[in-house]
Image 1 (cartoon, one colour):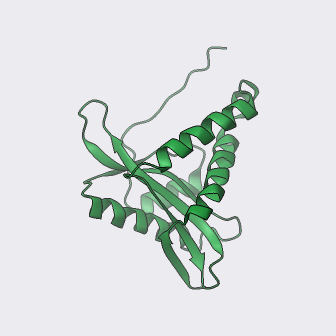
Image 2 (cartoon, helix red, strand yellow):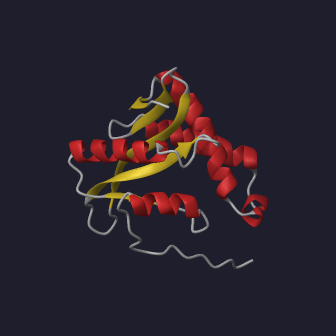
Length: 157
C-alpha cells in the first residue's frame, strides 16, 4: 500500500477532533471515568482542541492511501519547559486506524512531525504516553525517544 502524509484539510480536522477526544476518554481507567461526566468532559476537551489546533504553531498531518482514504494522523505543536521557558516540539496525539497498525504508518507520521519540528527550529520533541500503551512506547523508542521522567499518581479516594 502506498501511503502519503500531508497537512490536514479543514474538513478532516473535525474527524481528528472526534478521534482525539474518543481515544483520550478510552485511556482513562474505569475509576477515572466514573469520576467524570463524559458529556461535560468531552465538550471541554473539544473547546480546548479547537483553541489549540488553530494556533500557528500547531499542525495536524494525515496519512492517506493511494485512494486518499484516511489512515491516521499526528497532531504536533509547540510546547515549552515550564522551568526554563525553552520552546520545543510537542506531539499532542498520534492515531492510526485499527487494522492498519504496525504497518509503518505511525513511523511515517512521526517522521513527518519530526521534519516539521526541525523546519520550525525546535531542538527537541516531547510527548506523553500512557504507561500501559506498550505498542506506542515501542514506536516512540524506535523513533529515538527515551524516557526522561515518570509521571506518578496516587489515588486519595
